Every structure is written in structure tokens, then in C-alpha cells.
Length: 443
Image (cartoon, rainbow, N blue to C red; front, side):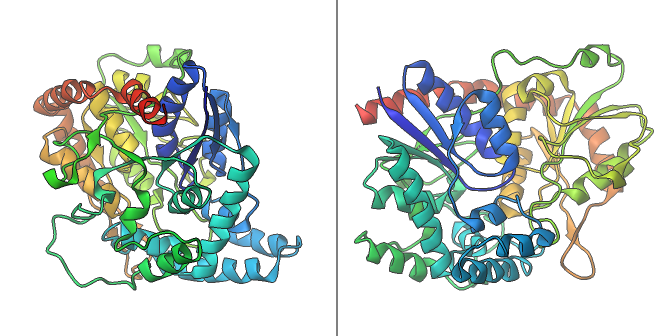
């Protein structure tokens, strides 16, 4: 039997875990040893609840990127004995991220630029930190979800790399903003920086950052209708990857909800990724608009925050809202008449799996891509946030949310389309097929 290490982008939300845990469970059921490397708080909790070990790199930048450190905590972090290089990188990264605001993210190159991969010292620090984890655990195989630093470290350590990504990240994709004409790159390319690091480790250079995410085996989520790529890409689709513990069930109070009123599951995602530093990716505006749009309406709103606390400023919630930190996603989606979420890929797949239509309020371009594709398939609709006068903060129209919620609830075709797509996607096999492909490669 083999030892697998699952790595994910160090973001403090549950999307990547809902994709990686199903494969981990499947491989574990076949007798393999499984561990994770995902340092953020919310993913760590989900990993622990699933019964897997979580190995954490010793690197302060990982703490910042994972959302575990607020701006008020930086001074304490710097006084704790970290090297001056780390302190300098911290400030460089934070200063850069504070300028991200609500800017468009064009493609995976742009995403990795915002991730800090323009900074050679930062990339080197991350790769070294993960190499330390890989050396200590000595896995037979790395299974990665979106972490370019882990992909480099796996190659340096000569570990087989299985990559699981979305079509928008493939080097031959049209990027995250495929509905707009191509425009000049609004950012310096991080490719030269990546190539300097790769050259140091005697690895071949790349032309686009998406090449870092292509493994020895690369599995693609969804199917051609939901995640299109040109035929020349020669990809292997695996359909849904969604997580729910086998012993999980909905709280008893769900059964007591009024059957004659629609049930809306509202999952805004992480309200604030980097507290006091940047609003990039944040979902606070999503939650505020939904509260204003749906308070006192004849709907029952179940609000979950994915193991994140609900800030006091939203309390008390309207009488037709109920908040829980976490609820089993597949069961809750199946019980719901409508989903409202931030456009994360896992949330989109959840609705498609259960045949539940969605109103998507995407918080950045990758999520807008997901939203537009679901709307094009007739399985939902979307509301696009705008920027306030400063250009730094999102705002969402409660009036537009209200109009589209009740259109989705009253038009049966959205549910019918979602169920049709669900049946087609289930044929691709999901986690069992992914585990079979991985084991076939390793064997």
C-alpha cells in the first residue's frame, strides 16, 4: 500500500477540501495511508473531523495566506523570533495584496501573480517549507489541488504528482474572463520568477503558469459541457467531487421547517480572508445584500458560514433566517429549493449534483466564470457585485438579488435543467473513478 499526501492552496475556505477529501476517503478505504497539508483553520477542522492527519509547514507566510493572522497580529508574529527575511516578505506580500481590491483576475497567471509569485524570495520560501514537509513525511505520491508551490516542491523532491484542477486553469483554456475580448496583460508576468526557481532546481522552464499545475496525471473536474477545453487539450474528466461524511445528517430542526415555504440555503463563503488587509475574495457584501433582500419574505433562509464565526454586526438576524456554522452540504442542498452562494466551484458542483438551482453572487473572476457557465446551462442565475466609489470594496444590489431569487423559485425549468446536468455528470465516476485512475498510474 502507498502513502499519499494531499496538498491544497492555503486558503481559509472549504472548497478545495470538499474536492480532495472524497478521493482521500476512497484511497483510504483501499488500504492506503493518507495525510493532508492544508494549514488554514476552517480546512484544518474539516480534515480533523474526517479523521486524517494534517501536516503544517513552518512558514509565517503560510499563516498569512491561510487567513490565520490578522493585521493586528503581525507585530506579535514579528516579535516571535522569525528571521528578518520572513518579516520583509510578510510586509511585501501584504502591501501587494492590499492593492488587489476587487480587480479582475484574468487567468491563472494573473491569479498566481496576486498570490505573490512575482516575488522570488516568497516562492523560494514556500517551496522550501513544503519540501521540509515532504521530506519529513516521505509520501509515495503528492495529490495536489491548486497549490503551485507544492507542485514545484513535488518535482524537486522527485515525487509523483497527481493534479486535480478546473478547466479554466489549463494552459490551453481561455482563462477566467473568457466572455470578454482578450486584452493586454494588466500585470507583470510571474513566469520569469518561476523559471528562475525552476532553473535552480534543474527543472524545465514553463511558458504559462498553468503548466505548474499539470501533473504526471491531471484530472479535471466536471465535464465538457460545464468545463469546456479544446480537443487538443486531451483531458480526463471525472465529474463531481463532493464531500460529506457517511455518518453526517441534517440537524433535527431542519425537519421542522415549514413545507409550504421555500427553503433557501445561503452559503456566502469566507466573509473576510485577510482581516484588515484586503477585501479580495471576501463575501461580506454577499451576506449583507441577501439579508436586505430576503428579510421578512415568505422564505426560510438557512445561513451557514463554513466553520467561520458570524460577525456581531449581522445580529440579530431576521426572523426568517437561521444560522449554523456548518451543515452537511449534499444533504442541505437536496433539502433546499434554491442555493445562494459565492460561486466557488465546490458550491456550484453541489447544486448540480443534487439538481438544485442556484443564484450565484461571484466574488472574483474565477467564480464569475463558474456562475456564467451555470447560467448558460439554464441551471441558475447570477448577480455581479460592483465596486464602491473607492474601488476597494464590493457592493451587491439587494433589489437585483430579490428579483432573481423569486424568478428562480417560480420558474421550474431551472430545477429541471440542474437535474438533467446532474445525471450526465454522475456518469463520469467522481471520486471512485479518480481513485482508480490514481492507483492505476502509481501501480
